[in-house]
Structures are given as C-alpha cells and as structure tokens.
Length: 395
Image (tube, rainbow, N blue to C red):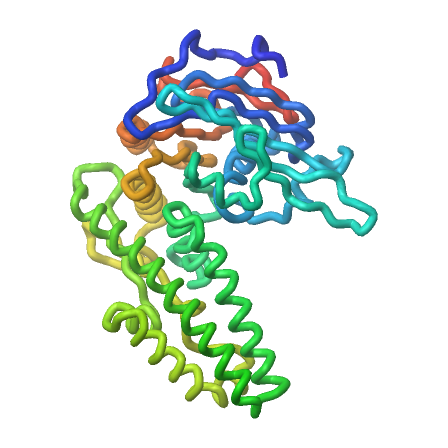
C-alpha cells in the first residue's frame, strides 16, 4: 500500500524512550486477508479501527509471530496463508531503536509436493535457524478478548497464560516445555505398552524430572519477580487493581523448598512410585503439567475468579501492564504491546487511565477498535489507521 494512503501519520518519528523501540514499517503479503499491505508508522501509539472482520486483529497476529510460539491465536502456519493466494505468506517488521534499524521477517513458502511448508525466518536479510533469535531484537506482550474468562476458566488456560508470561522474558522456555511434554507422553505410552520395562521407565523419568524441574523453576522465577514488582509499584488509587500472583502445584512446592538437584531426585522418585496409579489414569498425575497460576484481587484480597466481570477485566489489564514492565526490566527491551478490542469494554475513567498507564511505558502500543471515538483522547499521539477488507482506508 503506498504510504500516501495511510492517514494521520506524523511528519517525523517520535524519539525513543529509554529502552523503547518502535515499528516504523509493517509489511504483510498474502497473510490472512491482507494481500499486499505496506504500512509506514511514525508514532508510539497505533490505533487500528474498522468493522469486525476487517483484518485488524490479523495485523496484531502478524506482529505476534516475532515472539516465541505460534502467535496470539496459536494457529498453525498453514492456516495463516491468504485464502485464494499462492499458499505461502510473508511478514516483515522494521524496528527502530537507539538510532539503529533492523529488519525482521518470517513466513513460509507455498507447500511442496508433499504438502509441507517450512517456516522461514530472517534478520537483516540473513536466514536464522529459529525464531527464538528474534528475542534479541524484539519482545511482544498481548491481551485479547479470548483471555476475558481466564480467572474462571480451567487451570490449563492459566497455565498457557503463565507460559506466555515466561516466554516473554525467557525465549528458551518454550523448547523446555515442549521437551517436557514429549517426555511425559513417552512415559504414558510406555506405561500402557510395556509397564514392566523398568530400565526404560527409569531413563524417561530421569529426563522428565530434569525437564520438569527446569520448567517449574523458570515459572517460579518469573512469577516471583512479577509479584514483587506489582507489590513494589502498587497504587490502590489506580483504575486497574493490582494482583497477587503465586503458583500452586506439587512440583512447585518442591522447587520452592529444595535445591534443583534434590527436587529432581524427589520428583523422579514420585514418578516411580506413581507408575501404577498413572497407568490406571492414562496420564501422569503429578508434575508441571498440573501447575495452576493463582491470582487474587489485591485490594479486596479475594480470588480473581470471584470478582465481577468488570473487575476481572481491569485486573487482567493491570496484570498485563505489570508484565510489560517486568519484560523491560529483565530483558532491557521495552516490549511491543498488542491490545485487541480492549478500550471498547472500559468506562471513560478506566479508558483514560489505560492511556495514561500506557503512556508511562516505553514500548510501542498497538490497539484495535471498531469506533475511532474510542481513541479520541490520544489526539495527535497516535497513528489512527482505518482497516477494511485487508486494506488501509480513511478511519
């Protein structure tokens, strides 16, 4: 899309805040409903406005692909290619920080004769073996409507949210979690097919214990740091209540008390003693796959799930904003903050409070909404960009 079609862009880029960085250009080719989008950017706030289905969230998803994992929708790469397109897609970002620019790209080519298509990743034109390398240049956090029921939903949803918190500060966490899950699946299969093969079970349980403790320790460090940061900066007068967070689970209790080596030994013994029970259940009943993230409404000191729907939304926003501050503190990189349809469900006081809280952060903020009036208070601080049918239009 030619730059002249993009409305309300500032003439000059804003100066970077300390530790901050901005996207100065986003390109999406054959991604979701965007056939050929080339979007220049000038400001730290970016507001995408348009009707439902226009393609606003698709652009947030495109940015989220530069974080470890599969993006904010957790979709398969093959599902991201534009319907009716060649079958592949490409997304690239231009990042500006401390007077320097870097180009990051990812995507996939059309499937080959075997139906497979490998992911491609590049930094400044050079291929890289893994998207984990993007974390040296960019960090991303997000909040989507899918998370609105987080505090009342199943523990598995909170566990995925927890691992996303950890991934934003420790890009290697995803590979540890994946390896741990593979080890537990292998153990479950062996218990079903060869329950008396003690030598192989011992080997798998040793691997599962090492990986499980590593996962639990990474989660514990992130949650403890986040809880400490929240308590050190909490303000009961703010429109977004502060949260108290902790982990609950048998392995989490182990790593909280014992050194890593001792915790591994105790977890391995528990796995061995639980073989008969786990075989009967068809799954491993203890370990990091049972961890829960426990969140309480700090000012009221009640479980987050017991709060009103509005309070839960405000609590979740406050938690994500605190996490963004933690990411910058731990990585030295202010994250890109993606907020999908967040302003529409806030009253005017909380919406103004959200913009003030975002202003205090160093990272670039991307927001979506159906009504341009939602972002009127940002005035000239935002690039207000209309999106319709995968194209840039007047907002």
